[in-house]
Length: 526
Image (cartoon, rainbow, N blue to C red; front, side, top):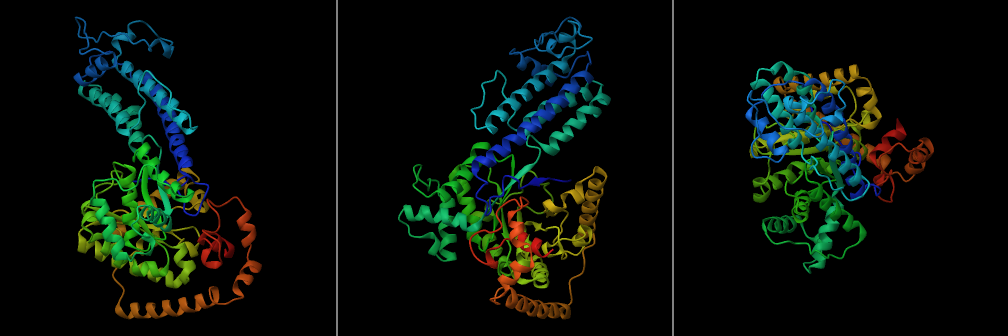
């Protein structure tokens, strides 16, 4: 029903400190913490599941596999007869030798616990850039491995008449494994579109194909599509490039090395064209990522929001891209297939065009994307990049969801919960429960009873207000030569830059107001 994803350690947009090695460390630290928690849960289960009975055939086969025998021996009464060398390590107060042969679920749980301990040791080493230790037991590397082992016990308890025991702590643990996986939460990767352009440009220049950056959009899309269809590698193994390009390539290599499971989406900030998305898909292919991360273009400025329907139409008309769209495994398969996610930027669009022009542009973009999804018969998921303040799209989430255009909420939606409001929404368990209830209720209501479309008169009025307000806003913020001096004198801009509050530097690059990130811009005024 609810999926949590984070950007901490994955959002490298304009942040030179978030590198591939840092992201790798964050992933393994999350795995270490998850495995540690599961280890403790299994230890509790060892005290609960003390049934001395005959399990189903699947558990018997698992015990035989654990001890390296093809078939598990039974005595005359049908009891499993196999000694567990690690049972004595539990130091049960009521220990007796018969436990080792009679209590079969404890034997399986002990094996699971030992594998989790190996997982903890492996994650601890890899998070410290040390080689993985050699263990006699293989650590868990995929969530379904742990879930399968626990589900085997759950099914056996039900089949053998002890289902009431399966519905206690064991079921709770299964729910936690399904919800949190081996990483506690998935990690989104985010990078600015120009960084991918620079990487592809370095490749084409090295291969003597010209400067990718100077090609028009049609040429870029055609070349990227051809390379995506091609079975030969594009990037040489020993590819000379600068540090910035190497870091982009290292991120994809890191994802290929770890696997896709700990990650969510690959978000492209400041996306402007279809080639931005295809470039990321090509870089994933070249890195050898078996299961590609879903690529989410983030449209942030007024011009990009106005152009995003045309951009997505070109992308969805691309033969390779349309054929390789699929619903991500962490999202329920509801409605049309395949699946496309698009992120909408509230903060940067408000900074670029002013609040009124921003919200109207966002509304029109969503309407156009909904029609586009119907045209191409795909599942559309809109990702709303909201912040805490009104200028960043903040406000009551319940009312915000109900105000979305008809058809834009189709049983699900993604929203960001920014750092400055996390405590407000999730600081206490009762508040978190109420927040989740508001999200769930508003999504259901927006899906079942969407709002009606605005009238033509309303659209015309909003169009005029939007253009006039945007023009006036830009004339002050971007065209008045004295505005920058006023902004720095009237707001705590410099002081905010010195505080350890943000997740990245206050600017993407050197420059004036246009280069200032939306977060310090909004915080300076509010």
